[in-house]
Figure 1 (cartoon, rainbow, N blue to C red):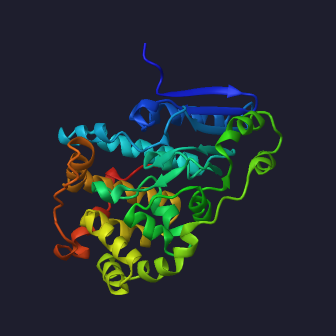
Figure 2: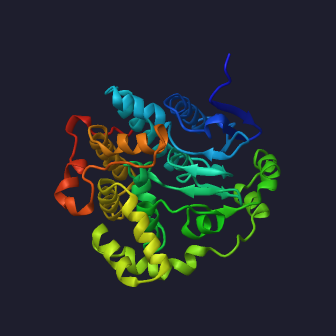
Length: 345
């Protein structure tokens, strides 16, 4: 019998979730989502469980994202599992956001996409020096979902817009600076921290006893120019502003943006701007509307083919350039779904 993709245990005062697909960088599957949601609901009403800890089996990643290959295959065959995955994942993310008990994510390793959804919305996010955090979806024709509509516009200044459009990777200092992580703890201390967390009276005091100041955050130094460029009124305007700056950082950033799906960039810009004024649940409903458009569209499947399946890294986006697009091009992605709107209990 193959080992379970996700493990659950009660230890002392804690319920512990262990993501257990290290050979696949703990990529989140529909099966994992369907196991995690009822277990979290059960622990929420279990008086013996005072807090939840989520961690990953030892390896390179906390969780590198959703199971992109499965999503690609479902999309190619018009399999409804594609939309079911996102609906159930978004409900899980919402449960985590509203969880009534401390929810502590131990982020050691690659944390992207679906891994962000099951961690960043919890009450405590512990980053180690091994963390690599990113929302790289615009590079595969997707958009920064799993609650990116909510947390990205709430990062300092325009850092969330910068992260969402470019897929910029954060290490622990930047994760703490942006608010993605609440604490920095050395990776060698995670086992000891976990041991204390399962038995301690006060979660915050326990974490603070292990927490340290991370190194200076590179994004803190870059924020003034990020704010200047990424506050522009549209993606084309951001790129034009970067081009006009005539410095190496701006040139490299503009070049990065030009490699992304134009459709994804336009969607991401709008979702982040609108998400700033929405509650979490409305953000998740918006994301599900967008996913329905992605399911019937081109770029996600082409981007996944180029990056994950064939690995030629030469996606052929449709439309091919921002100049071929307008606000009206992406408007259908945000249209209400009527009876198919995402139900959040």
